[in-house]
Image (cartoon, rainbow, N blue to C red; front, side, top):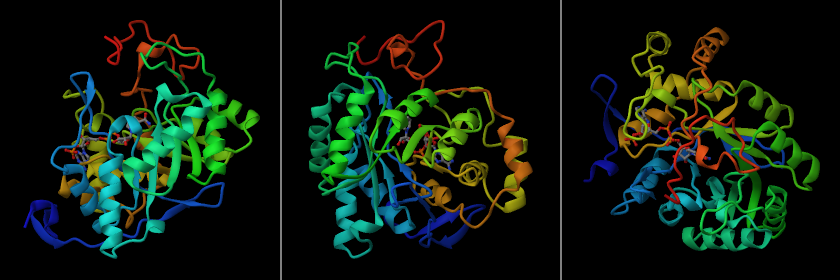
Length: 343
Ligand SMILES: NC(=O)c1ccc[n+]([C@@H]2O[C@H](COP(=O)([O-])OP(=O)(O)OC[C@H]3O[C@@H](n4cnc5c(N)ncnc54)[C@H](OP(=O)(O)O)[C@@H]3O)[C@@H](O)[C@H]2O)c1
């Protein structure tokens, strides 16, 4: 039996425990639909100027295991190159009778080089073909930034792109629509000028970027916030360790010990307790199980605040090579990075 399909894990302190399916709660979105309060990230990283692909159906096997554990929400994007293996695993689990299509929440995102209104429908149809699914649960504009095919800046206004989102929503190809990496002013413009409201905002949220203001604004507009890169500095990024709290941080360890959890679980629960939907990525079976076992405890307000104090507004997704674009959503930096898509 392959490791991925073993239903027994050495878990916490070497105890052998039978894995069981976790019932993940759901959050209501403003269009009446529901989103599972935890998702699985599927971005496998960027290496040698290209997105890392799944090899030998590794990601498909992770999704099969994830569905058995109770994951129902999967986060993809056309740029991640994972729509096909996610769709394949979902179809296998539907055929096995483990889930129905309605149990699953599949998110994917429009890439920046497809921002013209008419390109949105073609991109959605491509995602449907890749995944083999007949609708997408949540379609997100990955960035407000439009680019030409050669990655030079395009002058397509993100409101034009949003019209394309409204089109695919009306056609029923996508059940809900939202955005990612928009700042408050951009979100406000979408609310003022759009005819369908965004139901979700996906942004970077972890102990070093707690996003208090943007989260409060989204909440006041009944927009569900999805938090990406939830582990922040706790894990290595781009093969490097960055400054900031690690898994053995005393503040996190103290809270973790109180609840019999790990620091990783405490950080995920910190997001859940702030009504943010974490989408941790893992391809490791033990960590897949660890990351979903966060619905049997709850942090106290003072514990949430202790973690909030790690805030340093640090972003790990900061494409400063686009910072002169008129719709760049973040603060500009002094020394922008070279553009990996062009250089
Ligand atoms: N909208 C956007 O622009 C955007 C940007 C970035 C990310 N995202 C989405 O958000 C997802 C998550 O973000 P991310 O991948 O940047 O970061 P992340 O989920 O915070 O961290 C992933 C890293 O943590 C490790 N890990 C996972 N669970 C762990 C645990 N319990 N203990 C220790 N290490 C653990 C993983 O390694 P193993 O796989 O080896 O476990 C991986 O190296 C992405 O996959 C993607 O779907 C969206």
